[in-house]
Length: 121
Image 1: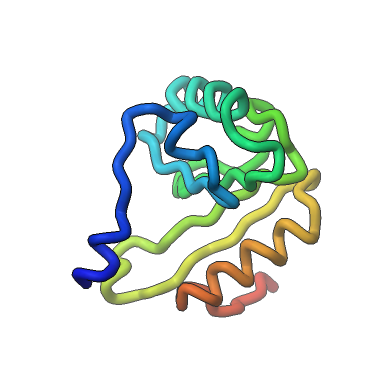
Image 2: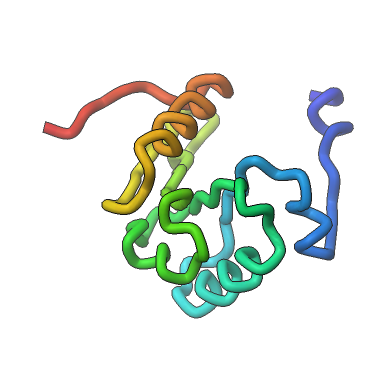
């Protein structure tokens, strides 16, 4: 735990916080106006290669994607409630998410021990 804690960096400057990020997982309050403002600001400062993911549990990707400047690199990565018990993440794309990005985020979730495949039937 100490190792992980010592690797955490805190920033008040969004550009500095995301300057080297491959993946940004947004977890701002579940209000459309707040998320819209956040993604507009994030789109201006993040590298074009950075993948954007929302941890939203009440919205779907198609509600937020147009606030970003990279629809092909946007999806949801939602960590289950009661994470100390469930250890599950949901990965949800929308029609414009590239399949490569979708698979890359699934691989990320697997690598951190948070993904189990449960296809919807």
